[in-house]
Image 1 (cartoon, rainbow, N blue to C red):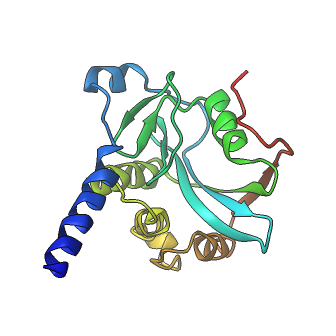
Image 2 (image 1 turned 180 degrees about the horizontal axis):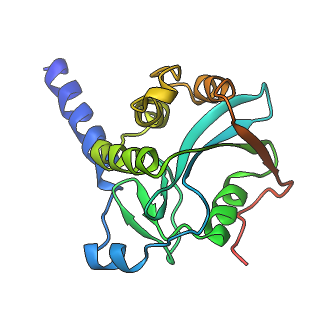
Length: 192
């Protein structure tokens, strides 16, 4: 009987984790598309705990035919953005800045690691993120690393649960541009 109860609890936990992922209407997703005039790129965003400098969450900004944020198992939501599974549409520079400031706060900072790509590579990563779809809790690193290492130039990025390991591997990619976002607030940040 105890095994049966454990199975029921596990099933309820899995269903509860999946219930958080609602998709916006496809028409709304298309309407929110943001097309940047910047060259194609991928930018790994790692939320780092200052206590020990270890990564706790990974997100990927992809500038392909449109600029999207792949935020696997992330808590980020904003009403101006459309969301389908774990991909946020409408990621203008203002929204990218907000996402970084949303996560940066007292005790945490955000490491941004950008690599410029060909248009084909960027579109490939966008499609790969779409294929993976919704990610369960505590699996952001696994999904983010799977998207990145699907592209041959990122084959050195390990498939791992650990966002810090992904960040360390990304630092070794030729041409990576690294930036940091720090804030000292203790509450929520709001978009300007």
